[in-house]
Image (cartoon, rainbow, N blue to C red; front, side):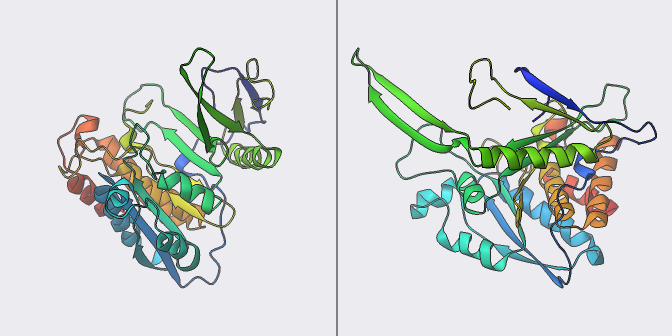
Length: 323
């Protein structure tokens, strides 16, 4: 729910003149209770490709905040296309059970989903969102720069469990004898209402108090009635429900650079900060966010996607020194 090329409905809340703008990834999203938690149990799901490089960086950032959060304990979990190729299942039952019974939150790296149908395979992150009822993908897009260029500052809130995510597809033969592929798009009042409520709450906490609902109701009159910042390597997100949250960098598994220390760890580190803030640990999250901002603004230690020549570890170390 943001401004975009489709037909949209704009909802503008009143803005107080004295309110200062804050970066969207620094806003409280929907705090889960952190009362009486002595240990923070974090599931780590690197999955495929550069996920195995950026999730360790996010773990180090969480450890670096020290006493600002309960003592973190990390639980390594399996998932992904590479796991599927070895074991025949992309999301093991053991991973799902540990998330439900042993973890307070989790971080997911990236998945190398194939572009063509592979028998028996289904995206593990989509399955996770459904199984844990993580109905909101909250994705801040913000430009951090020392220049005078216009600053991008928005948050995308996307419904995670319905629409085409129901994955109801079929292949038929048309009257001309040629194949026709069909996909069912499901929209319910329940899911529409709760994602709308989540978006409104986020909008109310932002300085402009402005919400844009993107739809295509001129074509889909029933179901739809209602890299802007330089690199995907800096864009974080969380998959949030009412009782659980999974941080997830927006970028993919990038197999072309996997294992070469070229992956940008910023999105994963920011996703860890978003996850902590969602759990109620705003001070720890702010320390991480400010450290990332400083490294990006100074521009001395950047990965190749941002025009630098630093490695994944070098960027991670630069951020850790500032947390």
